[in-house]
Image 1 (cartoon, one colour):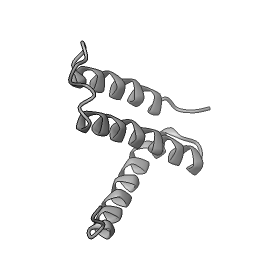
Image 2 (tube, rainbow, N blue to C red):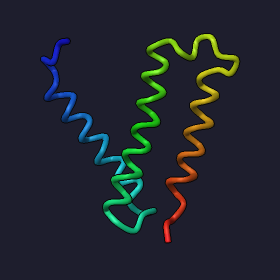
Image 3 (cartoon, rainbow, N blue to C red):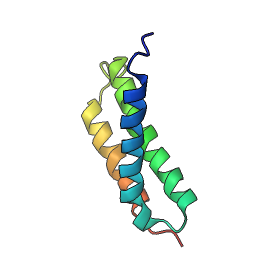
Image 4 (cartoon, rainbow, N blue to C red):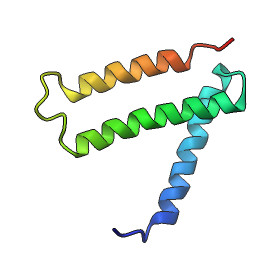
Length: 84
C-alpha cells in the first residue's frame, strides 16, 4: 500500500468529522452523543462506498442507489430526532 498521501487523507477526514459534528450537534444533548452519531453516519456512508467498490451490489435485485437513499433517509431521521 502507498501511504504517501496519508497526512492529506487524515486532514480531509478530520474536516469531514468536524462538518458532521456541526450538523448533528443541535440534535444531541452531549458532546459524546454528537461524536457517536457522527461516527454512525460516517460508517454508513463509508460502508456503502466500500461495498460498491467491491462490486457487492452488482448482482442484487434492488439497485444500490435505492438502498443507499433508503438507508440515508432512515439515518437522517434518527440523527435529527432530538434526544431527551
